[in-house]
Amino acid sequence: MSQKMLDVTILDRELRIACPDEKTEELQDAVAYLNRKMHEIRDSGKMINGERIAIMAALNIAHELLSMKLGRGVDLSDFTRRMNAMQTAIDQALAEQDNLF
View 1 (cartoon, rainbow, N blue to C red):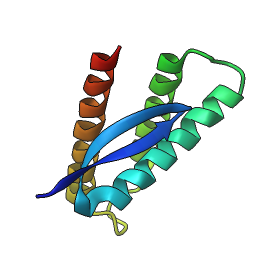
View 2: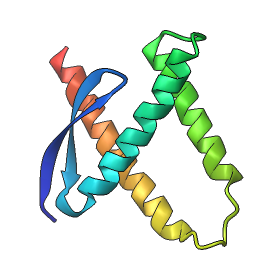
View 3: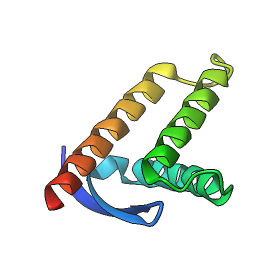
View 4: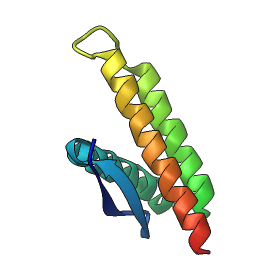
């Protein structure tokens, strides 16, 4: 499985993330969705700390996921696999960022 490095921006922070070639579009969609959620939280004026904004965005997205009605065209196993792959990519990117500072 071939991987490439993607440069993404989430809440005005640039990250470099390793991603399998065939998952690039999915990861970019996930980044755009997360970025939009984080901007909504920040722009509401209730939070300015990036870590807290990220936690609230994660909670909101988890709530959306759990509120979905499963069994209506959603392949839960595929969704879980994709979420795990994205989590791994995010963990790798954050670990690489920690080494930069």
